[in-house]
Image 1: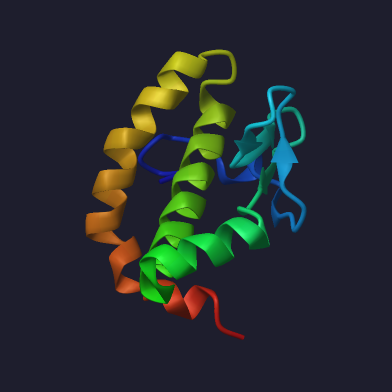
Image 2: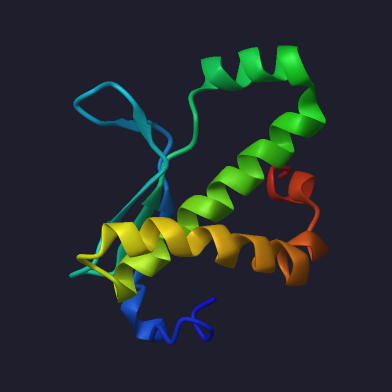
Length: 118
């Protein structure tokens, strides 16, 4: 992803997964946040309550696939902020194609459930 978009590896100083979700003023949750000056990316997972309800409706396998895909998409989106800091419209459009091609090439090689096991 970094090579494809020509983003310097040094542009990313840290990637963190925060336990407590971050919400906007309108109450909707945020999947990720990027500090372009420091190169710090934060990914915010859904709440435990959301995951429990989702699991009851759709099952564990679907929940793990959803959580993994959501985290990957958020990470791709935030990485693109490093390159297109002020162009939110561009950052919103590019992940649609980037995520689809990434899933086909690299990400499907790693089983999603392995990301959640200790």
